[in-house]
Every structure is written in structure tokens, then in C-alpha cells.
Image (cartoon, rainbow, N blue to C red; front, side):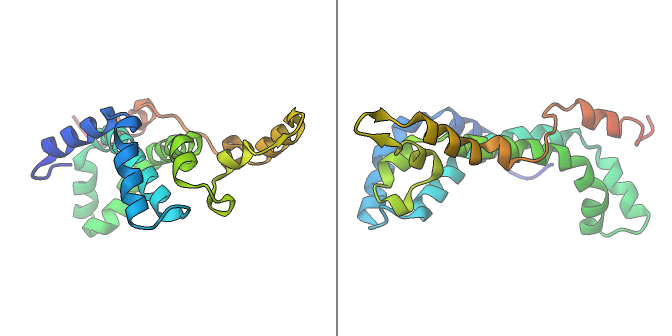
Length: 180
């Protein structure tokens, strides 16, 4: 995809990916506290989106670049509009990359623990990974209940499909689509 400012956008995404969460947590906590939004889900949704977005952009960049632009042009020659060409030709080729990237993004946000621990003290605003740490008794951790609950809510149970994240299958699909 070509657009003005593409290189700067990718550079910003790479720099955002390199920033450790410890750099942002204090400033983000103060913003959420001053906005009176502690113990609510919107700040968690915002920080999860900001943490996963650079990864998804950089991952999907390779998939989008691997699709030949001639496929879209040939669909438009055959009578498709640009949105129809995207929906009927380009999107099916990008579907494996979208699935792999969304699965990795889901697992990344699922495994994210420190932000919800810092921003949500109320049990009604806690996410499942933090809730699983609450299986404690006076005699220690209740590992039976913890393992039973974690097997019910594990990310592997949430994802019913798997796909490859390499560009190999996409190249195999598009290798004979364009002459030359």
C-alpha cells in the first residue's frame, strides 16, 4: 500500500513497539486516576489497543505487501469497483494473515497482567487472568480450582482455528495469479 507518510508511520509503529510498558505505566495511571476512570474497562481497552496495534500493523504489512496489485487491477478491469475488488479478491487472500495476527493479538492482551493489576482493584472490573489469581485460601493456593477455571477460560479454548503466520501460503496462493 502506498500513501504519503508511509515510512514515517512505520517508523512510529516500530518505535512504539520498542517502548517497554514500565515507561508508560506511571503516566497512564496518573491520566486514568485524574480522569476518575480507575476500576473501569475503557482505560484497559485503550491501553490494550495501543499495545497491540504496532504489532498488528507490522505483521500485516508483510501480508499486504505480498498481494500483487495486478490482482486488484484485473478485478477492476473485469467490472468490479475498488471496494468489490477488495472484498472479492484481496480480502480472501489476506484472511489467513488477519486470523493469525488477530490470534496473536488476542493472546498478547490475554497474557497482559500488570495494567489490569494496577488499574483495577474492584473485582467487578477485573479481567479473567487477574481473577484467576484470587483462588487463595488460608492454607495456600487452591490449585484445583485455579486449574479448573483456567482450563475453562484458556485462550486455546477461545480460538477454534489456527493459521500460519508466514508469507509462504500467501505466495503459494498468488504465485500463478499474475503473468510474468
